[in-house]
Length: 87
Ligand SMILES: Nc1ncnc2c1ncn2[C@@H]1O[C@H](COP(=O)(O)OP(=O)(O)O)[C@@H](O)[C@H]1O
Ligand SMILES: [Mg+2]
Image 1 (cartoon, protein in one colour):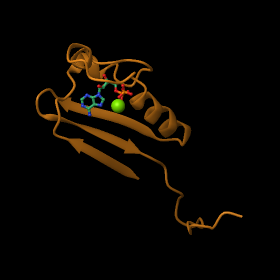
Image 2: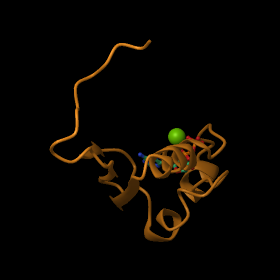
Image 3: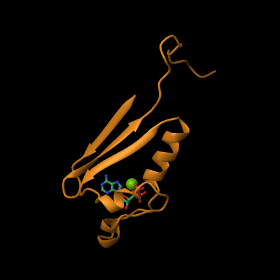
Image 4: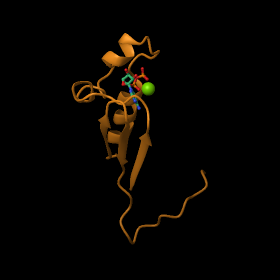
């Protein structure tokens, strides 16, 4: 399963994008413009995605926006994929 989230925000430049998923990393734009945050959001998404066998990647154009792409494995055909009520 692939989910893409697209924004038309400030974007993230190539150098910051290589580090944006690191724990506590904040972009220079965030620093320079006093954008609030501690740099945990994307690291949390990556950690949770990978814990489920998935991936998260991003592409971005400064001044235009960003696309975040989450992939998650789904059960192969033949498995019972019906949602079950908790016990
Ligand atoms: N969609 C986005 N567009 C531009 N900058 C972003 C976007 N998402 C995150 N950033 C920036 O990338 C850095 C890492 O983001 P994140 O891990 O979500 O930190 P935080 O928890 O502080 O929001 C932060 O400096 C944040 O401002
Ligand atoms: Mg965030």
